[in-house]
Each structure stands twice: as structure tokens, then as C-alpha cells.
Image (cartoon, rainbow over all chains, first blue to last red; front, top):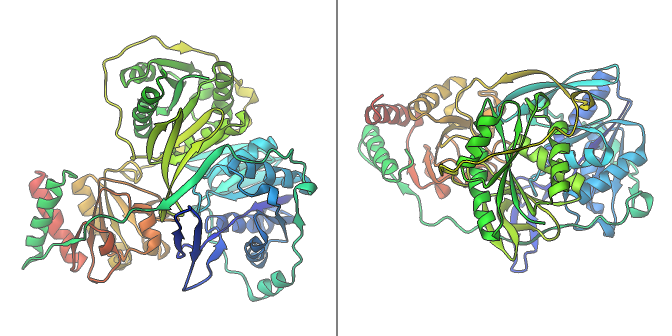
Length: 263
Length: 325
């Protein structure tokens, strides 16, 4: 059983993100690495490795669409235990919306061939749309299983999973192949091992371009998100409630909250 | 292409809160475009839902009532909405950005090769386009997003829009057959356990949260007591969840839930940027923390610099008294 794990490089959660007047976004992280594996994807990567350890997966292939820098994210996936990594990178793919991205990833998964499970994080922390998994499933013609919190069983060509909906936990079964998006409850991602990091640093990561993939060129984007700007600062400063006793503080705060009509 | 469609998520005959909000926003969009508003009512035994959709302001209801739609499965709902959209070519399809709304919108957009603008927190209509404002980069920046060509598929964030109100309007729904027969749907639901832990975080109008400062699982007791008196949901920071003090589905923040209640009370939460990403759109933020330099005070509207184990019981007692509980 071949498993593909789709991952994206994103700004780190602690990155300081700025935008200039032309809407050009840049970031830096003075305390650490400015770019990381999208934190939600770590659960997908870990689940892929667990499918190898517990469910007989033979190959766990990390796949990313992005620029050359995204090889860092793929190296992290390799260091954690993925068996291979592939970068899809082409100027022609720049500025794709989620559907364009899904189309490219689906074409890459088809090129890998004989894949039974494609894993995604539930969303990326930069765009936060959470659409790519379902859209890639549509382009592959596979069943999408989103917000998966546990893989229960894989047998006789079917997979049984637990999903987290807004109002409860659902257990569903579907025939393979499937696309799965994972939530945090599914596992606890491991740290890359020292040996894993050494191996990942030596790994040769192939780069596939548009010419290598069967995508009809119409990747593009129907969505315009060119207008990006800074969050307006919150108006006014905090009002610290001070008094001689906590009971008095509680009374004063309650007054405020009733005045604000939020209770 | 004409007409604004809004998907009405429902269960047990009730329209979900996020869909009530979506109807209100869709009504605004339809009026701005000068086009009629059609509610998509899909499910099983949904006559009352169709009536409610008219009452909440839909001009028309397009429905499908079938046992295969009783429990949401995107493989049943997706092909049906895609087929209806191909037949009737609406200009806009709106849905709440719930887990199901996100799946449905993504499916339909993929099959119609349509653009999808996701997770809006504000809607305007300009030059025939429904333009969304939405936070990006974990709420550190804002963007305006719209579908530039073709059918516009749009999802809206929970609690960002007021719920539609009753209009007294009535009408007759148009009922259609399902697109896919049960034996053609590969996914089978074999179990469902509804949440039993009180108020859901994303729907809550008040959230009382605890962080590292609560010190342990038992430290959530006073947090829960205050939440109980206020009818609030219980939230937590990543630090408290990672320490195993409270389950993950309570986590608010960049790798947890994004919430925007009317009132967010943060207790013993320092207010790391990752936590802020999940709650900064709350209407009123109260911070209780011993450390006057905690970053949460930069975001909060009201603050109390004191021990949460003294403040919380005092607040609980005060609200008990005022709310007559």
C-alpha cells in the first residue's frame, strides 16, 4: 500500500508578518525558523508513518507544491520517517488558487501511481481555507474523508475512520482509495530523529515541473485575493479594574459587562 | 447566471445557527445584486425546515427530501448541488463555513470548476461581485477575496454575521429527486456520537477560557463554574491542552478553534500570538492574570491583575447574584 502525504511550507506560528502598501507579504521569525512545515500537516505526516508501522503501508511519500525552499518542509517529513519526497515546482503554478493546487497535486499523485491513501492536514495556517483535500479528491475521483480523528481499520479494500463534525463524532467506512484530512486529535507527531535528520539532509528530492505532469495548463485562479492589508489595531487601551478586594473588582467588572450588553 | 443560493444546514428539523447567519448575509448579497434568494433545503423530513427558510427571508426554496440525505455525506449532497447549479445556473452559492459547509463548497467548486472564496467575516457587494473580508496568516493580516469570473461560491465564518430574523413570509418549495441513489454512495455512516459536553465553542456567545495559569486539570473547576453560571462554553490555551489538563476540542487558537463570541474571558492565559489568532475577533475580551505584563492585556478591553483562583469564585458569586441563579 502506497501512501502520499501532502504538505506545504508556511510561515512559523511565531513569525512576525508584515505587509507593504502594495500588498506584498513578508515575514521573519527573530526567535526561530521563519518557515516551517504547516503545523496541521505534521498530523498528516505522522499518520502516514503510522500507516506504515501499523497498517502495512510500504511507501510513505511526502509531496509538496511550492518553490525550491519547500524542500526544507519535505526534509522535515523525511526526517520524521517518510520514505520518499517529491517537490512539484514550476513558475506556471505560481498564484494557483486551491482548485489549481488540487489539480496539480492530483496529477502528481496519479503520476506516482497505485496510491491508496492521500493524507492532508486539515488546513494551512497561512491561507486557512481547508479546501484542497476535498478538491484533490474530486480531481482524483476518490472519496474524501475530512476532519479524521482516528483511523480504525483498513481491510478488504475498505477503510474505517472516525471524523470530527461540528456536532459530534461520526464513524464512517469507505472503499479505498481515499483522501483524508487529519485533525489534531488523530495522533501526536514525533520529533525527527538525529539519524532521520542526517538521512534527510543527504536525500535527493526530485523536482517535477508542469511538463512532467498531465495538467492541462489551465491551473490559474478564478479567485482574486490580491488585496491584503494589515489588521487595524484595536482601538483604545485595556481598562484595568482595580479595587480594594476581589469582590469589589468582580462587582465593577460585572457592571462593565452588563453595560457592554455582552451578558 | 442569476440568483443567490444559500445552503441550509439542518438537523432534526432545526436550522443550524451558522445557516441562520448565512441566510441573513445571503439576503444582503441578494438585495445588493438585485437577484432573488433561494434556500437549498436538503435532508430527510425537512418540510418544516423549508417553511422556516421562507420565514427567515428566502424568496424561493429548492429542496430534496430523501432518506439518503438524512445524515450529511458530501458524496450525496455534493452531486445534488452540482447538478442543480448546472441546471439553474445561479450566480452565487453561499454556505456557512462549518465542517460540512466547507466540504460541500469545496466539492461543488471542484466539479463546476468554479472559484471559491472561503471563510468570510464580512460581505459587501461591488460590481456584481460578492466580496469577502477575511483574516489570513492566522489573523495577523486581513484580505479582500472574491471570485473574479464565473459562478461565485462563498463560505462564511460562524458568528461573524447576525442571524436572519423571522419575516412571516411563506411559500411553496420546489422539490427535486436526489442525484445519487443510496447504493451508489461509497461512504456509509456506521456510528454517530453527538457531543455531550455542553455549549459548543464555535456557537457560544460567551467563552470562559483557562491557560497555563490554572496549574492543572483541577484548576479548570473554577473556570467551569463561572462558565456554568454564564451559560458559556469552556475554552483553553494550547499550553493547557498540551499538558493534558483538558481535551483538545476545547483548544482556542491557531492550531485549535477560531472563535468570536460576544465575551471572551481569558484566565491565566498569557496571550501568545497563536492564542490571539483564535480569539482576537471576540467583541469584548476580559483578561485575568497575575502578570501585569502578559501580552493578553494588550488585546483585552478589561483586565484584572490578580490570582485567578480568587477572582473566578468572586465573579461566579457576583453573576449568580445578578442573574438570579
